[in-house]
Length: 59
Image (tube, rainbow, N blue to C red; front, side, top):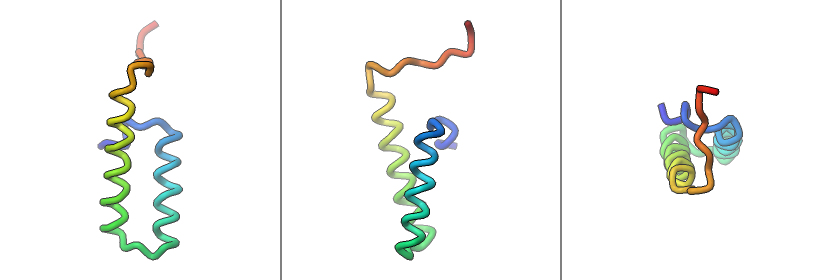
């Protein structure tokens, strides 16, 4: 699942957008398409950022 790779900040951002879309009476299938496109865009930005540090499980 794509959301597993996003940070908690990004997930909260998407949750807030979803709440906004609900308030705008956007149907669930359309919200899902919009949120998925935004998440993909965020992941693209993160993977292209050469200043981003990789998180390591080791010490």
